[in-house]
Length: 157
Ligand code: DQA
Image (cartoon, rainbow, N blue to C red; front, side, top):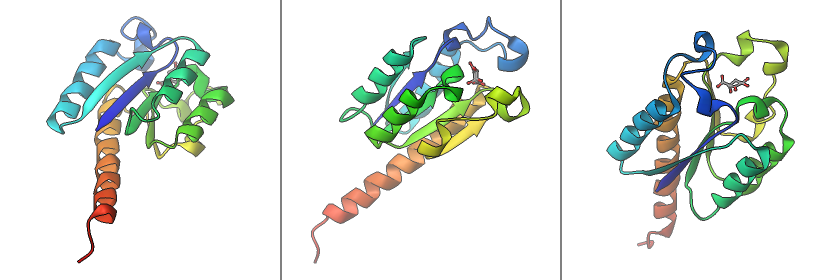
């Protein structure tokens, strides 16, 4: 089974941008940790980052038939993008939304997520650890869905 991790605008700047909010870890450090969890659980994992809304929509759409789960931090698009929300809704793949900072303790415009109504869960304010927690949670959901599928396919005796 495969997880696709989708990172929105400015997350390529982690380690440089506002360390007081996002910490010193770089995106590669976060991805390395996620990779190790995926490996331990025999999952494939792939990473994608873009600063462009349309590219994020394209990557979500490409997940159909490819991914069994998505971890997404839409970054600033969380608060503005109906297009990303619609894409997540359209693909019907279990999805976890992550925010490094506690968006609910920040400016008012960050306190609304257009994405949260269409995801399975949201992890907010744990710093980079949030990605680890999201990966663990998503793997549980994926394994459960897979087990249910196998049970349905098993011949009835
Ligand atoms: C963020 C929070 C967003 O409001 C912000 O625009 C980001 C990062 C987070 O991970 O805390 O770029 O998604």
